[in-house]
Length: 163
Image (cartoon, rainbow, N blue to C red; front, side, top):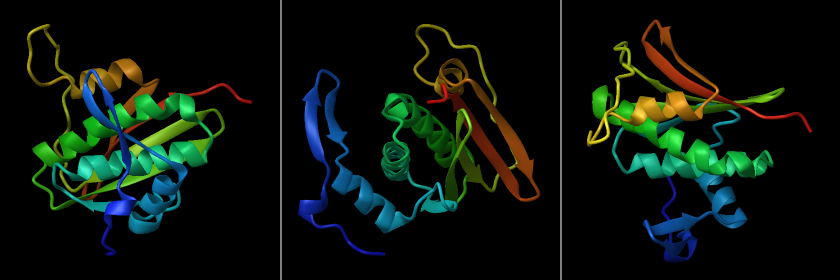
């Protein structure tokens, strides 16, 4: 795996919520070159908290390549939630990211080796955690879990109007 130099770091913009990376076309292309393109084949990432930013970067790169910038914020947030669940709750060493675009739909999948099903729990206003699947449920058009012989794939889909 190639290393990243300081000149390859994404630019950051300061907002009220803190510094947010800005994904340039160059940064997007480098992320896809470095890790692989999840729209072509599943990309395997190490199951560490910092891998969530890599998964977000890859997903945003694909959304940009597909010309669907209206999905960038939602895809970024929901990928974070699915990856966070895979990292925190499965004990896996790696997880996989895959993206599909078919007529009228974008689908994002996160695969892990655990067959334990995620639970959508009610969320109360003061809850400090447990909002991940709640957000996936509210912001996606459809979501679900497909059990595999060795693990599961948790996915969400976003519908978009045909051009």
